[in-house]
Image 1 (cartoon, helix red, strand yellow):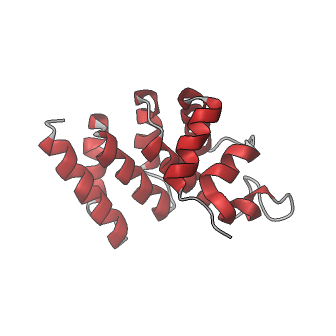
Image 2: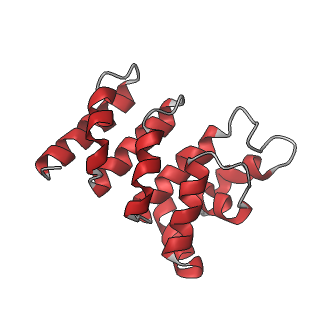
Length: 146
């Protein structure tokens, strides 16, 4: 079964709901909201999201729920508004490395200037992928004069 890539799904959801609603949903999920927007989670996670929507193995208390935060940050790669900046900056300190990595990618793509200190610190993260994403973010921010 073919599933469209995340960018395609997210942009299509922006057409359906409106960009602002998608951004709001991503902000809420990235911030750790307990209320589940099942349709947005399905869009953000694609076929991999099925476990998150299952009442038996999903939900905010699942050990894998951090994936929803990763997907929400990825959603902000394609649906952005500056009001998401403070949530993305907080996500740079998430205990899960995949969330930190994706947040750093968002910082680089959207040149989130207020994240400079946090991504500079992440260049010493114990996870190489986080360090690499943080380095790219620092380069993007300094090149933009942020």
